[in-house]
Length: 576
Image 1 (cartoon, rainbow, N blue to C red):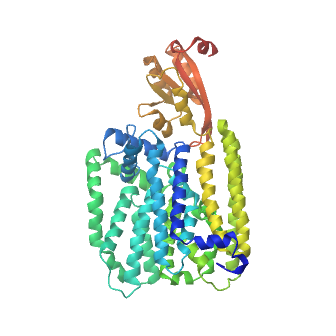
Image 2 (cartoon, rainbow, N blue to C red):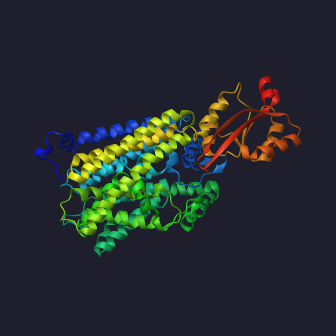
Image 3 (cartoon, rainbow, N blue to C red):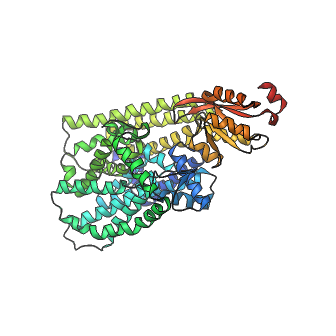
């Protein structure tokens, strides 16, 4: 890779190459990402279903004062451990519990921490490659999974930051005790490793220990010796895990008579391992096949990993990242349940390996290696075109009332994809650092536009927010509100915990007993609701309707607002 020379000493690429490795540039980049995602927090509506459930459970924890057991409405929320609810409810206590952005802030801060930790790992692992830290950070930040999780009130961005802390200490233990003749370092290394593993358990159960286990197992197989493992201090480490995790485990077990752990382990974890949970099953190799999308535009450079051959496993840092990447990847490919964010914990390792491959001097590649490099380029072109085409399709199909704004964001996304592919062609011809930096920077901008711009503008799919606006526009708020058919968690977050999620028979009885009530009926249940209401001799009319697309179920829906005609204006009664 050319970094200097008279041929481009006065152009923008040389300027980028000069400023890229400077620390102030890194912090300015983080500040820019922070502000962009923070704006996205305000523009993006609550996303079903996981985000809405996490946010609502955190809101109820804050309002109830119960810091032990999270609940979604009256149902125990035993899907994940407690740490994410603590973080989100604390953020909501400071910034307000009505706005979804308050619950998303921990994810944004965790994403920034993950980028800082990736930078620090790059500095520690390859101190002689001064461009590697910033390139690895740009590759990671340009991933759509990374940008998406920073926008959502979920566990995954927080888990990534914790796992990076854990892996940072594991790397230092591996480096000092296995690969150098230096005397043992302070014991805080093993303490830090086990401390962050314990925090990871409180964030998302077994994922952090699994990452550590697969990394250690991979390093043991590659090195064919285990003597360094004694410095992990397993006995003291298990004690640290117990001190940090057991107080909450005991408290929640006592408060729920053991039901929380039973649901979490048997109902959630084991069901994911045994079969595809909630229709999220997919075959082995799914993540490998979708890597071009999940790591765009970084996939363009993934082929360079194969140009290193066995040299990649000779360097201790590369060996560590390979063990981190390969072991966990194999596990998630074997698990039947597959979701895009499952791959997130290994993306820092992949970014570090690619950055090293791009910057390391290599022998001329063979025919197969050249083919794999070209395959990476081809995948980038393919997925770039897919993203551009999908952007326009989404804008046209789901733009709804804000279709004009959605189309503008789709055009902007198309321009960014075009720029990425243009600079990829420049990289292919000359492998100049400026092109690489421009591609990654445009990738970050692209995914910010797609998530915080385009997706936020698709009013057709943001039904819950429109539902809230419709109810707020009524002359007076109903005494009670019942939903039939449309039971999405986002509606609960917007309308409050007191909303009633009923079936058709319950809704008919509800309206018979609540003369000032409002029943919102999905169209497929409407005929049965009218029949039951007539049997109960109720005089009901349609006050309003709302149409949209329920993306959680993948179907178009229409909601009808029913009230007693005595509470409606004459014009509305006549129209109905």
